[in-house]
Length: 209
Ligand SMILES: N[C@@H](CCC(=O)N[C@@H](CS)C(=O)NCC(=O)O)C(=O)O
Image (tube, rainbow, N blue to C red; front, side, top):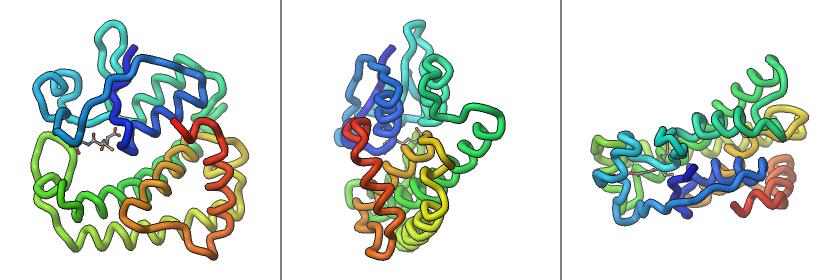
């Protein structure tokens, strides 16, 4: 099994943290996004959507998408459970994880990809090129601000993002809060719950993955 990765990119970091929490190790292949290696024919054969992370199984099956990679690892390495333990918890974890990704991570991507000069003409990852829209960068930053405030409120009522247990939703949220720094959005002084949780997440050895 191999992980196609790019050490500096936030999306594969989510899978690396997930693996570290489960104690899963595998060979890692760096795909250099800075030289657009993901756009080349060799990588397109592994993932036609041209993104990392990708897990390649020993039989050659390639699994792209963070959520699909995590699902595979959860099924093959059930302990500790990171995607819920019973029907209710599984659904609640999925609900929170989706919100963290959609309202947090995608907002960060919207802000960065529509403003960073190296991403000119590449405002969306994947096989099709799109021009940047500066207004979307502003909107992404505004969305990230709301994300921080809403997450702070959630963490005032719950130890972890999805409830009493650490889960993939905490991983998505941690990577999103760190990624937000790339567009200069950070937890504010008043976000005491978010700061408490962020310190706790960063103290876990997996955060270094
Ligand atoms: N929907 C994908 C998103 C992954 C993604 O956007 N990865 C970025 C790195 S953080 C990437 O590969 N970008 C390639 C590009 O910008 O062309 C997933 O869930 O895995």
